[in-house]
Image (tube, rainbow, N blue to C red; front, top):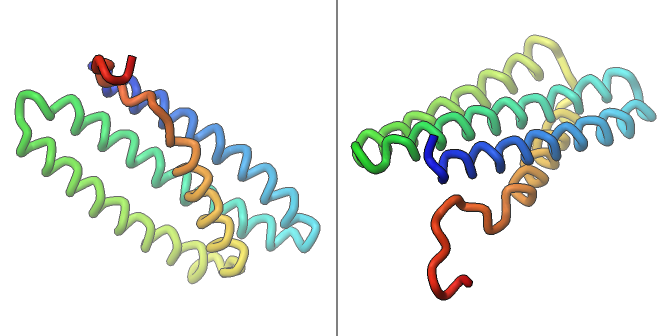
Length: 135
């Protein structure tokens, strides 16, 4: 695994840990409203965690391919984005339509988990070698 792929993997693990914390906090807070609300919030965070996991895998794979096959790397990123979009639609449809979860709690928890994941992923650990200006 390349240095950049390892950095992507580290960031991905951090995102999952932060989203687990969001799951605990939002699930506990929603439990004050009702058990159904807590289940809805937990489902929303789980959808965000699944999408974060899918992003981590596709980006690590694309990073590995970037040097030898740049076009395949781009295709991997595009395919990963399409798969995440379809997965989001399918998982939300199952949660809201099939299971009848509360949309306010599921979508709200999903958005908060995604925001927390983006904020957790920010940082300087890109895996790229430091340039002389960064030292």
